[in-house]
Every structure is written in structure tokens, then in C-alpha cells.
Length: 71
Image (cartoon, rainbow, N blue to C red; front, top):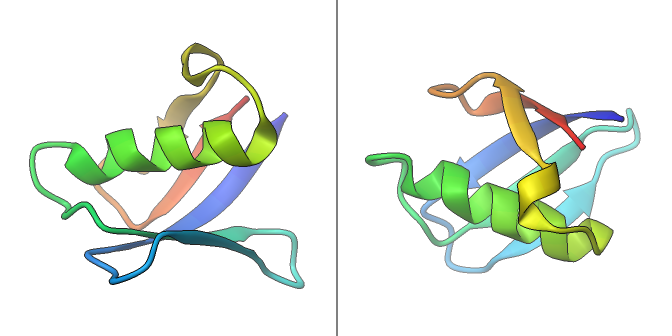
């Protein structure tokens, strides 16, 4: 399964919002520095989907706010 997500790094709250178009917007505390936000996104998505972190990979958008994840 592939998920398109939009990341909002440096947010005051950590949450996941499902958008009407099927994408997820992820708000995380971590900054977009040295891959910290990517690590936080994978952890948040794993908790949201109740799946192990090892099953989630960033396919596209490693350095972008719009990412494509493979679960």
C-alpha cells in the first residue's frame, strides 16, 4: 500500500489528519534537519496504522514535505 503524505515539521502538536483527497497531513515536533523529521514521520505513521516501523519506507520525497510512503 502506498500513502501520499504532507509533513509539517516543527509543529507544536504531533498529530495526523486525514484529508478529503485521501492524503495524510502529519504534524511533528521534529525539525527537518539531518533526517529527524523523516524518522518522526515513520514512527507516527507506524503508530497510526498499528504496524512495525520496519515495514514503512519513504519511496519519494526524502528531502521534500510531500512524500510517498510504502507500507
